[in-house]
Length: 391
Image (tube, rainbow, N blue to C red; front, side, top):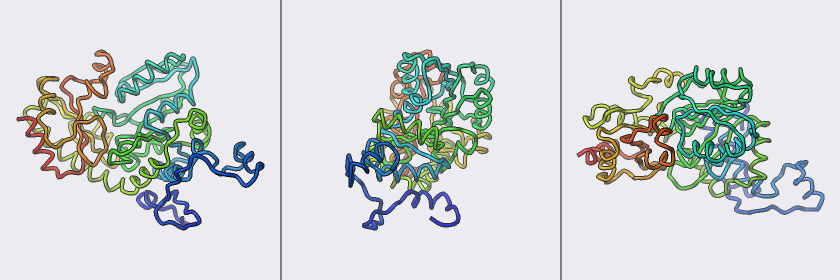
């Protein structure tokens, strides 16, 4: 765009925008399944890859490309592949990079569906998984085998906001010739850019903060041109979990305001965490911005903000947690997160409900745990609604 590399907020608004011959100011939505050719020779060149122009929207689409190039610029990657959902992004990475007999070391503190994908499905095809405590670097090191090909982690984790030293974890992975994949959904590139700390691949559920208003499903994989631009893209081209052009357009517009929204989410989440920490009904609050958080100092060193997710354990277990949820009048009871509207869920019976009791215990998913995605409402109104729940 200019001789000088633009700053983050400029990239969020301008990156990837390639005007058509109509010179539209807002990015166009190309709602087409296919593209025509001027000749049989041109068609053959595009299908073979000799000509990189668009030919079928499962493979590439101009609107999707805008989103991919913009997110790649924000994460500091060379390539991005958009997917139909966040889980499709994770699945595509695993399918593209692993084979039967390979071994993966994963954090225990990940989204419940990710655990189910690994243990119930990928293990059927001969991929072995071991789960370790996210912040315990010694455990990661000890879990490495000659067949280890990949490390997978969320940081901060879902739902208890546990954090790992990304650079140290990358060093352990690379020493064993393994790749490090980081799920960056809680922070987004506004607050954290894992590639800068040595991660090889970043995955996103664009459904969350990137959209920001709970409208569309989508995901993305960001990394280098070889692993992501060729290998992972090949999975999407053949497997078909492509992002729709309309959803890509929504996500591109979401990226334009992502920085502003994340700063507002962070401010309100910190205020709410400090308030929750003083409530008699609360046994424990999980938020990286609290000095009491075990990785508070680490969070300050690798994140520019503490995020919009606050989890807390209610005294009295599941019954007490459910009573609070059922007495709320404003907060949305839904498992989605990253919305302008504040949302609350009981992880043990929703996002992590398909895990065994032992798996939930290992991941510190207590029966009294509630996960709150702090939205953009007035903080006083969020507190007032929680007070209704507590009463």
